[in-house]
Image 1: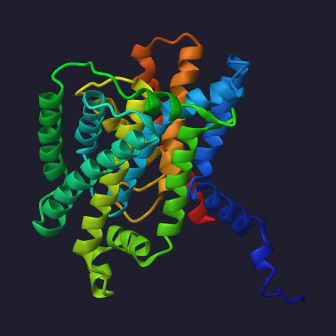
Image 2 (image 1 turned 30 degrees about the horizontal axis):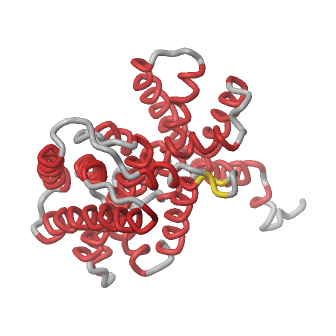
Length: 332
C-alpha cells in the first residue's frame, strides 16, 4: 500500500483551478478581459479604431468618467458614498467657461482652481461624515445640491468658452501618438499604486473592511475618512477640468450624467460597495469599458436612448459572473 506524499494534494486539478479562478476575479482581471473583448468588437466594426486619432478620441471621452470613478473609489473603499461629484464637476466646468485664462500658465491656474474647488468640497464632506457622524449619502447629497446651485449662479444656462489652449492641448497627442488625456489618467493610477502602499492607503482598506478593528489597531478612522473625501474631491476637480477641455463650453448640469456612471464603473471594476475590497485601477478600467460600450453601440446603429439599458445589463452580468466565479474559486 503506497503512501500519499503531502504535496500530492496541492498538485491536484481542483486547487489549481480554484487558484486560477480566484486570480481571475482579483483586481482588474475580469474587467480587463471584458474591455479587450469589447475593443475587438469595436475594431471589427471600425477598421480605424487602432489609429492614433481614434485612440485619442476614445481616451478623451473616457478621461472625465475615469477620473470621477477613481475619486468615487476612494470613498467607497472607506465604506461611504459620494454624490457631490456632480456638483464639483459642474462648478469646475462653468468656472472655466466663464473665466477662460489662455496659455500654459492659464491652464496651470485653471487646474489648480479646479483642484482647490474639489478639495474644499471634499473637506466639507469629510468633516460632516467623519467628525459630525452624518451618513455619507445624506451629507454629500446636501453638498451636491449646494454645488449645483452655485454652478447655476455662475452660469444659469449652457454657454461660455473654455480657453483654447486647454481645449486643444489637453485633447491633443504628444508626438502625434500618445493622448494627453491618457497620460493624465495613467498619472493618477501611478499615484494610486504608490499611495496604496503607504500607511494611509492600507488604512483606507482597513477602515472599509472593519472600522472597529481598524480603530483598535491604532488607525485614526476619522482622519482616514476625512482624507478619503478630500482625495476624492481632488479627482472630481481634475475630472471637471478634463471635461471642460473636451466640451469646450460650460453647462451647469455637466456633472449630473457622470454621477450614476461612476457607481457603475466602480461596481463593474469589482470594488465592493460595502468597502474594504477593490482598487482604483479596476474602477478606471470599468469607466473605460462603459465608454467603449457606448462607442460599440453607436457603431452598430443602436439608438442612444438604449445605451443606458445595455450599460445596466452589462453591469449586472459582470457582477453576477464575477460573484459566481468567486464562489466557485472559494469552493475549490
